[in-house]
Image (cartoon, rainbow, N blue to C red; front, side, top):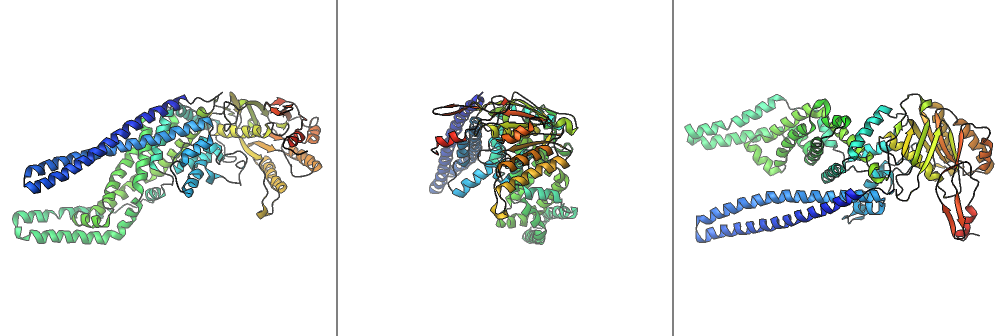
Length: 620
């Protein structure tokens, strides 16, 4: 069944209409600003030419109108930028729903001219930096890359959100969530997926914030907690009060007014110069902070105004210790505004000669860190969790049929070794054309046979990916799924490594030995996925080796799937292994080629299409 993209297609038309409206307003305001400026300049020239003060009054009025138009134009431009970002986000949703990765990456790279920039954008969207060879299943299950689970599901535009989602895909070995924790996430994902408009609004806001790098300076400053001593604030207040001396001189001793002003200016400048070194820490930390603080503030503002019903989402949004994140960031935003005013050295010199601005800024920045520092890293971490839940909600949009899996609640590893899925399908395949299958394994091993290209490898990848989605609290492309909490390990894509003197066969031995070691040492239930075991050696060794592996993986707390063409090995398991079930794929032949139905059936297939395929490509 095809996924429904109607909401996003309708939204696309709405966004285009709004962009046209705000585009026209922006042009009109831009022209109006220019006209006001020209008329203002003309009025000033006329005032001097005809020596009539009325023109100065007109120029003043035009200046005020010009400023008003500038403010309005700024707001309209911000709205136009927002709708442009929203349009990009909406287009990505449509591409993801259609499974059109080429279109998705064209959108990602749109407007980028330099090759390096385009490559960086592709790496960012594909999550390639999270790929790792040294992992239980990363190399086998298409987690990262141009056509990957990350590329299709990721809707996070922040570095920390992307990292949190990547971590969900990679899992954490034996440290799997409890059933209650997974169910809690399912409820949050369910509410998020019910409001695609909010998801798009959040993503567009984050995109405009350009937080592709961690706010490390901000978090470090908050966690270091370096408050300014109270006496420095008192001294700054005294400096402000010194201006009462020139004021008093103006009233009582006018002749001493100039020396008094110069004296106060000198004292202010000396105090400012003496504090430059101590203040440098705060202003260095403030550099780059405003946009980060503003973005995090906007994201939390959006979350807080959205009236979520789910308790877990409310808990994440509430902030540590009940302290409002937007409240704390609003005060920091206010401080950083003044820090930005004195960013130019000349202006800093001028303003601090009159008013000890630096001292007040540093004092209040230090006070903010002391009061809210502990909660900031917590707030960013919670934001990352929310964004990972948003990514998990995407299955609801890209799959024609999906459902939340039922998770085994028992803590016994023996009870958790099972996977029972009805009409499961792979989320990277187009939902309108992919074939779903039903699989049932309980404390046993499924041996899958069938000819080349019949669907064996895709099936075991589907089982692995559906399990990953289940453990992150996502829906799964299926009619129903029940499974235990298992560590997932695989041996599928095996490559040699000349640099480490590693042949393909040796590399496979290392992978499978890791699975067996986990089976013996881990207390967690295990789901293993092995594709064409020991393909790199002779038939006798392959058979004997496979039987040894099956023996080592035959335990009540283990279940798994193995594809094979080794019928000698299969024959020796039929009467000796009671924990093995058999599935197969079949095909139909005609004069023009082979037709696969990709439907899983019970039993063993002894079909081979290698010679037929060789003939089709001209090898006879």
